[in-house]
Image 1 (tube, helix red, strand yellow):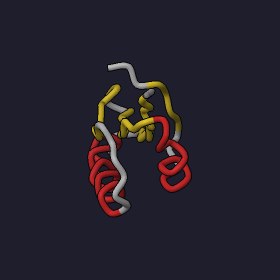
Image 2 (image 1 turned 135 degrees about the vertical axis):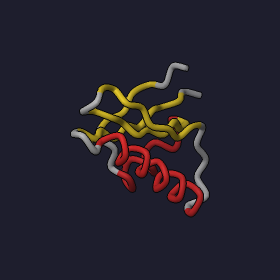
Image 3 (image 1 turned 90 degrees about the horizontal axis):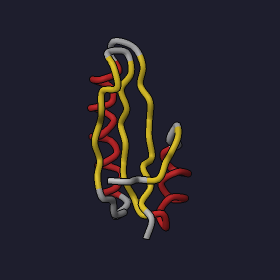
Image 4 (image 1 turned 45 degrees about the horizontal axis):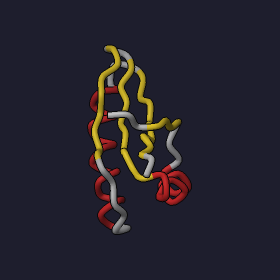
Length: 78
């Protein structure tokens, strides 16, 4: 099954801290809704741009997308 990476972008000098905090909420949501996921993490692209992301199965995309409104998504290729 294909895996998707749903991504939230955070920009500015506080972006890294915000992306780390967003990961906490992603985990809380998945656990509260009893949804499975493969990976939740954050990444600093540069000092003014960070992302938070969750890797899910393609079959779960609509549930996550509709509830969490990611900024974008892409195929996950480890």
